Image (spheres, rainbow, N blue to C red):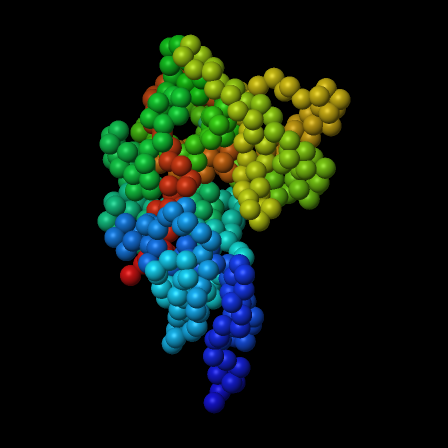
Length: 382
Ligand SMILES: [Fe+2]
């Protein structure tokens, strides 16, 4: 008998309690499971066809309670006193839920911060290989989850090419600008992006209650003078801001400020914190846009502290250490996390050459969902 098997014990029921079952599992540990949880999550509660829960616990007349409960081979068997039903609960399901914690998520990957010298290391994928190879699609999405930024090369010079690329990740998600947007010089611009002026670093459409997640910017042609693209990793800047200015970090990550975007047919408003934290308390991204920041409606004395912190952070975003600069080339599509990567451009001359970008968005949840499906994670995987 090896050391591992000598410490294993046969699982057993130690007590049928009033509201739940006391059991000992093979690791020798004592555990408790609530009867509602055991009944609701009986394997028969789930349809193998739809992969959804087909049992509705709201239809139980009385609180679930067992007559008998015991272990048989690798399952806990419960005869319910309150209905004509027997549950066979696999041991591995019980073992997965002995401690209250969120379910493992393969899309919850640690982010790697990047700096101004990142351009040559930006993960690149050609559109034909993404279409042909699901493994490449998983690598592409993983690169965006980790770095927040990737470039798709060999894009077709067509509107359909952009749709095709976005749909490899999820559904195109409209904003108040429509399903797609065209960045070129407009005669009557509704947005600074539609002029040839410099565009300060920002995230897109923060005035929406849920700003779009992943941005696709397909460069169809770029032969103008000037107009270098500017990108900074909000995670890198906010990480350093947290160390450099803890009080400022606290203000920007806890206090929401108003954003707006209005024109003839829309009046979009929201409140967002400038620095976003994830469920682990780590920086997940930013929401920032000088052209969509509304008039701050916060207490004027509070603004004595908030505004200087806001400006310290805004200046830090523009430091050379963080800003990646490059010229986009026709046939490339920038794909980046709009809640993490701030983007902008230098002014360009509209008199020589052409500059045309076409863009759209996919939500981050769609991207994570596609990633989990591609890497084979799922309760009902076969
Ligand atoms: Fe933008």
